[in-house]
Image (tube, rainbow, N blue to C red; front, side):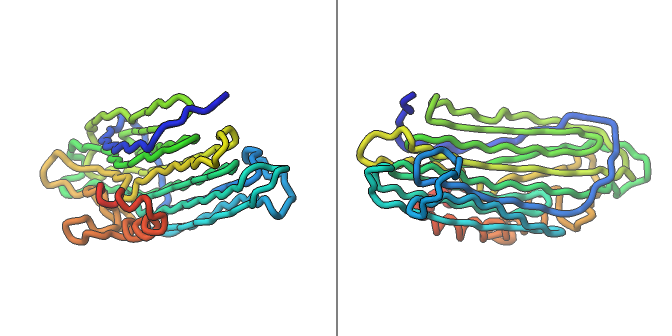
Length: 302
């Protein structure tokens, strides 16, 4: 089926979503694990990597990094294949994956592009875990807390491809809140996350198990392109997201993470913009955006 072709799309997504209450307390480890990877083909067989012809590169790469309070990865690659009547037109694919995370704050950027008959995928994701102690008053005092996850992301799409982001904030007592968003060239349909918010009741002395996940991925598919080597170019830029937060609506309450990061400002162990305009996550992702070049404008949106 012929793919729907459309021009560059720029979408800014902002989300504040909420938690739903549960009544269990679970133990949690402390740490951050990030994954990043990509796959590309220059022969036009979508991601099967069956070719052994060195003139038509095919490659799959996955990397993982872990840390107590921070973890990060940056991956980039490119491949080309010359014009060959037996395979098709000149082909070039490029891929880029970058992610930096701390408990409560994540930034990621993923990009894939292909001309000719190339295909490519790129992804990045994170899981973090921590424990939260509710203090600041007499043990057993009921308090009202608010759990939120904030997302800012920009989708860029040109040619044949798709992109998506999704994530969840999980916690004992308050449950789980999730978001997702996507765009694709087959349907031309953009799906935005649904905003919501929810407060919950805890007690001074409670220890909450917290975890968060955030992922982004893009796919470009140029198998069905018309003559002329058109470009398929897709990216997700969320270089200052996600922000995982719990704040108290009851005065005098202290919320302390075992990692020492902050859960109340959405920046974890990264300094918030008021004290440093380029936190750790933004520095890493910003460097990657400069490499990609065409995404430099996205930095100004965040």
